[in-house]
Length: 351
Ligand code: NAD
Ligand code: DAU
Image (cartoon, rainbow, N blue to C red; front, top):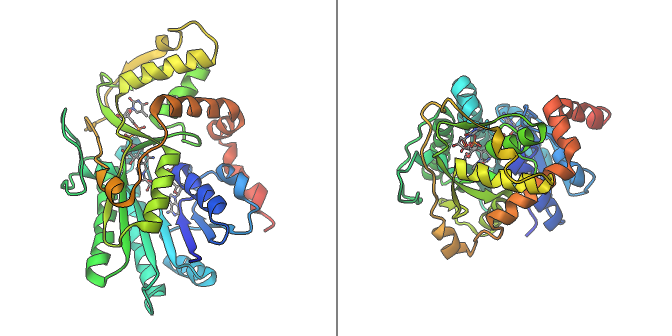
């Protein structure tokens, strides 16, 4: 079946991998990327697919229901993969209301718009919401989050994502609206904005700047290579059951401090320097307020029901990531200097 898919937030980190995957693997589909191009949206992530006949970009805000509806009608959209969000926990501690607006009201606006456009027939329609393991809160030393774990968000970011999940479930229950939610652990890989742990550390090592480890570095995250997340999204989009929630994880837990040590080793190797050089930059700084101790995902439902499992092991994924940042120094320069924000004007001003 041919699909006409609206991907929101497709210029961001994960969204750009999902857009590239769908544009390349499904030439018969139409992929429409709707993105507001906030500081996190970077069209340079998508230069590879820009001219593809089955792809188009529209600059727009998920909060603008009239605009969303016009795009859906004009493009004949039958499915939505919703990634647009404010995604950084530290920013959410500074400006929590922005997170409520974009993540909660934005998702609700998108749901409401889709329901209106699709009201005559919900058959063959799908609203796929991309969420996070952070909605489950924080774990102690043992245990895993399952799809049945209660929601217990503890940062403004995770509270806003939990709020958006609740609205998606409410639409499924109240209106029989065909929606799926997936909740993934920490992603890493190419195109990751250097405000997040791994790309920030890579950038600072290149620059010889301190490596700020929050608290004692004892917090644990479960890391998944971003292309594995995109492959899980592909699997769930095509085979997932409406009304269901699927956890996605890497089965790959790392204490922050151990991860930073490993990354320092990979960087020293890459930069042909004496082992131990990068580690000298490690600096312990004030902890993140309310810092969640540990996330770890049980993704056995996704494996059992849909046959998905991750394919990239961590040492390989980390090396691929480091190589990507070295091969794409211009991308990093543009992001850190802000030059990437002119890309839209340059590429789209006369379209
Ligand atoms: P990101 O911050 O890199 O990208 C977000 C994108 O959304 C950007 O392109 C931005 O311009 C766009 N956007 C923001 N507000 C918008 C609006 N109002 N209208 C239209 N577009 C808007 O985020 P990411 O890390 O790629 O995360 C994508 C999604 O996956 C988010 O929903 C996030 O909660 C979820 N998620 C992320 C991770 C992770 O590790 N990064 C893990 C699990 C789930
Ligand atoms: O678990 C999924 C979530 O992972 C996603 O939903 C979020 O969108 C994504 O940003 C990510 O959230 P985290 O807060 O876990 O990611 P971050 O990269 O910000 O931090 C990872 C860990 O590293 C966390 O324990 C905080 C710590 N950290 C982070 C930064 C930026 C540091 O010690 N130093 C830093 O400079």
